[in-house]
Length: 561
Ligand code: ADP
Ligand code: MG
Image (cartoon, rainbow, N blue to C red; front, side, top):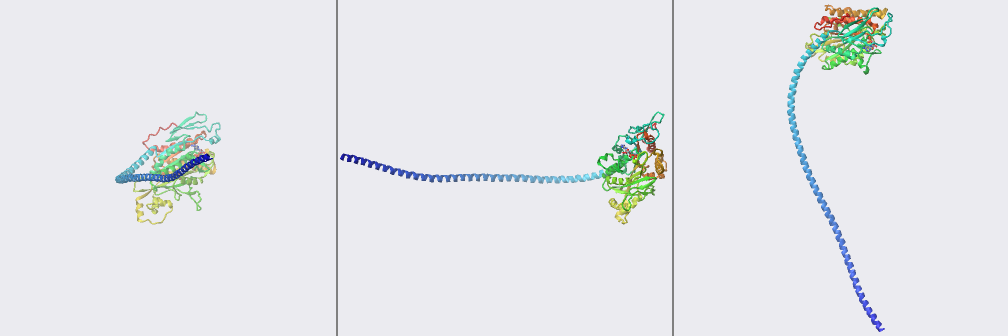
């Protein structure tokens, strides 16, 4: 036990020692833990403070960068501004220089303009002289072609040519074509009589149109006459031929229910009258505005009476009023009280002519239903004011001049247009008188005539009133032939007054007026006699110019004459 106690006590002491040792160890561990804790706290603190500084640093860096870029941007901006202002300055300088240059150029231009103005004046003067020369040349050209010339147009064979027109000689092929254009100056006609060999006869004219030639081609030869018209010469274009030979087609165009074709697709079909009017207005449009104006009258000569187709009754309705033709003191023909309508363009004119046409007296004959039994005369009167006296040779209507001078002033064309054909009693002021003394009104006339059918009575087979008509027609056409004959022989007296027709046309037939006779020929065998008659008339009319124009070599008379 004792021993045991000693061992246990030793063991106890050892255990005490160990305990003390462990306690010491534990104390050290606690310390360590505390230290570690403290260290950890410090580390955390440290870490925190380092993030802030890092952030601070980053911000600082960033700010620096931004500041730097801002600075450089501002620098760039100011540089740019400097550059731009420099270029602007250059531009301003250049503009100022440009302006200076332009000023100089302007001055030069002004000088040039002045020079040009002067030369323009000179050129205008020269142009005026050249214009007069051109007029004279154009006129001598027209005169060389003959103041009276005859063209001949052969129409195509048409369906109605087939219908047997009259009783005699039924075996013959009436629709056989016997008239041909041999060339553009010669017409060839095959004349055959039963029991005889057929003979070819030729006739020569200034121009022969074959049946295929268009309205355009026909008008192309007419147009130069209109230049003469504006140069101050009277012009007459007439279509001669039997009924159905194409007179109305040639002068007016195809007729639709008595109306001139207006539709655009028919434009190429328009005849001489509408085309001539268009050309007159075109020529006028080349002249100074307001220097020319145009009046129209439409008359019909029926049974040797003149009917005004534009006269209106008090209600404004159109009806044919009988008028008379007289010779004025100056020896010109005039139709007192005849209605003259002022027109400003070709369509106004066509409208008027259509109105007049609807009144035309027609009477059916055997030759062609609704043949026109009257002469239609459409007159365009062109008036222009002439200052000074350079139109010495022109036809001047003194009466009208006097009438117009009373009411007109320097600006009379406008006045006349507003208030045509009414004479005003307004007193002229001294200024107006002065203006009118220096100014003359010059009138020229374009007369466009669709003659009545030239067929003889036997051919038409008419009696009674229609016979009377036909004999009046024949008389007026032979009066026309007589007038042309008298002009041919240069007789002192030309029997214009033998018929109303020739009296009406007096101023545009003969003298230096230009006349174009358009012979219209039906090509069929059926119409041979009438065609030969027309060709005879044309040949006779054509001889007129032989007496007048000596310079031109005329073709030898054909064997057919
Ligand atoms: P006129 O006036 O001489 O009596 P028209 O001009 O009335 O004759 O012509 C008779 C017919 O012949 C009309 O139907 C017309 O359209 C036609 N005609 C005349 N000439 C020609 C032509 N060159 N081309 C086509 N048709 C024509
Ligand atoms: Mg006719």
